[in-house]
Amino acid sequence: MKGRFLCRMGLSLLFLCCPTIGTGAPPFFQSLGGSLVSVPGGTLDMGSREGGPEAPTLRVQIAPFRIGRYPVTVAEFVRYLNDAPSDPEYLSPQIERRGGRYRPGRGQRRMPVAFVSRDEAMAYCAWLSKRRGATVRLPTEAEWEWAARGGIRRARYPWGWGDPNGRARFDAEGPGRVGSYRPNAYGLYDMAGNVFQWCVTDHETPRPDRHPARGGSWAERDPRFLRVFHRTWFPAGYRNADVGFRIVVEER
Image (cartoon, rainbow, N blue to C red):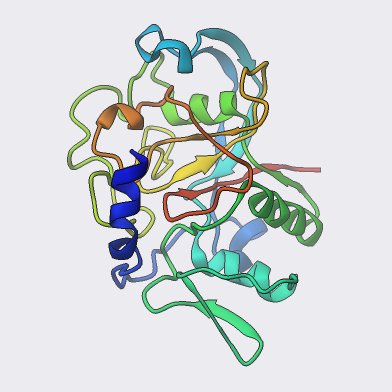
C-alpha cells in the first residue's frame, strides 16, 4: 500500500474545486460550519473474525455521544490555525499562508483536512474545547466503529454489505469533498474512504508506538481497507494526504 500511495502523492495535490455544502449545523457549531450527530448508546461486538488479528473481537458498552457529521474540513482547520498560531509555521499542500494569515487553497474549503498528525488533531480538539465550552476530542475506536455501523449490527461497511463502488471514495487520485456519497443510517458521511480518521485506543493494544486510524482512504485499491472493523496503525507523527479526523463532543 505504501509504495502505491507514494506514487500517487503528486496527483493527490491536484484536488478538485468543490461547492460549499449546507450542513444544517446546530447553534453550538454554526460559527465553525460544523454539524454534530447524536449517536445512541448500546452494546458493540467490536471487530470481526473476518478481519483477522488486526480486528480482534471484543464486547464493549457504548454510552450515547455526539460525533461530527463530516470529517473536519480544511476551512474549519484554517480557523484554528489563524486563532491559535503555532511555531514553526504549519505547512500543507491544502493550505496557503499570505500576509501572516492562513487560508484554504483553491477548491479546498470543503475537502477533509489531511496532512494532520495525531497530535495536531488533538491540539485542534483542545482549542475547540476551550473556545466552545465543551469537551471536544477524538473518538475512541469503539465509538468510531459503533457510529460507522449506523445501527446495523455486524455490518461490514457503513451501509451494511455490498460493493463499495459508488458508495465511498477509494481507488482514486485524491480525496473528494466531504459528503459526496450517501450517509449511513445515523446520517454520518465519509465513514468509509476519502481519508482515514485518527482515533484513540480504548483497550489494550500490541502496538504502543503506533496509533489507530479508521475508515480507509481514497488511496486504497482493496475495499477490505474500508470495512468498519479494519484498523490501520500509523506513527503519531504521521501526516500525509490519506489521514484526517473527525470530532466527538461532550457537553459540559
